[in-house]
Length: 510
Ligand code: XMP
Image 1 (cartoon, helix red, strand yellow):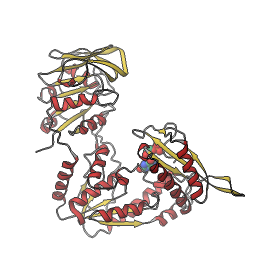
Image 2 (cartoon, helix red, strand yellow):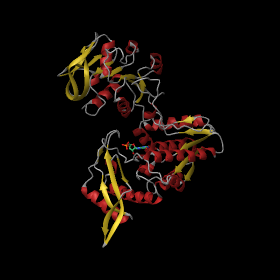
Image 3 (tube, rainbow, N blue to C red):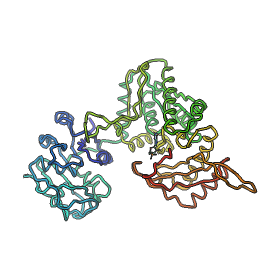
Image 4 (tube, rainbow, N blue to C red):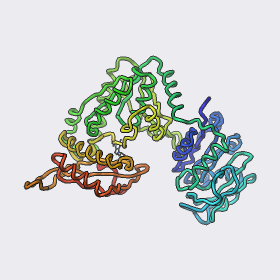
């Protein structure tokens, strides 16, 4: 039986990915398509339900995104959210106006009788963000929710199975938002809840076996979550037909390269090629201080070594990548023909040929990738790995990168990681690491004056890395970290803590 699908029709709202993730959390597959997707394509896909997202426009602006009215007659249940709610009202002949009072933030909502509001109290808090509102519900629609300033905060047409809410059920500030989405999926769309990771693994493994046959596959493994899970999945599907190429530039955290190698060679059936080129990388970076030049050199060298290794492969095969769903979503904001740059997709040299490209995780969000990784038996250190910049420690050593500085930074960073793990802080932080600004300061050790390196500790909490707060690590843990780094790491005599949020700072220092 085919997996049921919900369509999240994107009208340019900022929470669209969140809507799809919430739906999937309820074990129903959701995909996001731009509002420019044709009605024929939508009809053919046989969705179990359609959700119109929010968006920044006004429906009465002729330039704003609209959709053919017939979408409301497909016999497929529809839920409109915010702009999506106003759009349904507009399409069905109701009245949409600029609201006399814009609502923004948490608002008291009164719910009426509706399958959409099953098991939620009459009065609850919802999250609003709108300047227009539905002034008059269309004929055939009844108002099923109000707020003090919004006379039609929710409406329904039960005959056609069309529902709409002015608020955002997908954000956690809406007290019963999750229940409302659940009700739409199970009470209205009658979903089966068949999107579970075990099914995903089974069907994907089956699909990969069929596609790859007896051919070979090569995957670039970085040790990050996405490529690691792709490797584990491919290994389960085709075993030794898979070759993972792991380029170790010597810019990973302490012992991390060895850990990645050990994990993949001991736990999985595959060919594992580790290319050690730390010395070469350091020599290429000699005398280079400018951060952008360093990034460029590291990136260029990485791919030079990587493609060289691929050229050494014995026969023509497939090329696999750990691309995930957010890298593939088309934006509904502007020209839908323009697909967002797939930053995981790599430009390959002309002389290299493949039978095709395989992206086994291209349907998954990051949290789903982690769940698949756990089920495939990958260790927590890899599945819950923090984001780590492509250029690695190369951008955490400010100025020139030398082998000595890499060693100092790796040692200090290992102490920080150890203390965070011991104190249970590891999972509470989005990211934490040490930085070596390349500055030396005066200190005293015993009776001697020292002149050694300063290490900065950086730790942040964030939802999306677009903004971030500096983490309020307790003083006693910071004291322990500082004490241990200055005692255990030669050439470090001072530790400082970065108390800058983003903005104005960035997470990384370079
Ligand atoms: P910033 O420093 O921009 O970092 O606030 C936001 C997130 O992106 C990561 N980051 C990078 N990742 N290549 C990457 O793959 C890079 O050059 C790079 N620079 C920053 C950073 O670690 C944080 O998670």
